Amino acid sequence: MARSKDFDEAEVLSKAVCIFWHKGYNGTSMQDLVEGLGISRSSLYDTFGDKHALYIKALDSYQKSGGDQMCSIIKDEASAKEAIKKLLELTTRDLLNDEQRKGCFMVNAEIELAAHDAEVKEMICRNEQQFEKAVYLAVKKGQDSGEIHNRQDALALARFIINAVRGMQVSAKATADKAFFDDIIKTTLSVLD
Image 1: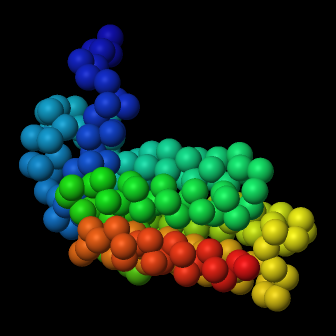
Image 2 (image 1 turned 90 degrees about the horizontal axis):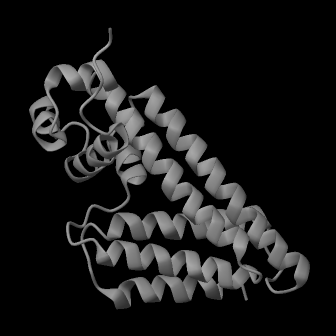
């Protein structure tokens, strides 16, 4: 008879996200995971597999919650410009409230692993495609309603906005200056006028 687990898998996965996000994949040892997750090494392997498998599960969990949140902000707002503004403001607020200055877990994974880890690269690409589609649809909606200018292609504008978000996520590792991020938001929104 299989022994029941004496821990909550979702809670342990949430802890794994925090550990990998803070230390990175290469900076996290199995001992860090055992200590930080509060489970035995054998339970870790039995439940999640090796370090890489756990990292992939953690990254997937982060992507689903973060991606869904960003996409719902964009979809739920009646005004396309207001949706984009809220997205930029939420990004800034989340980054500035993080005392550890971790940046974005997905962006960190892209920088650290995507160039030599096909599975991580595929996850990053899927995440970026989902985000790009949501921002594109918001820009297109704004262009169709006349709220956003038509001088530039909607996809090009969406990619510009996403690049601004990614830049903010990287910059947050080095600065907590709200004025810095406010300037980025203001300039990004001005491109839509």
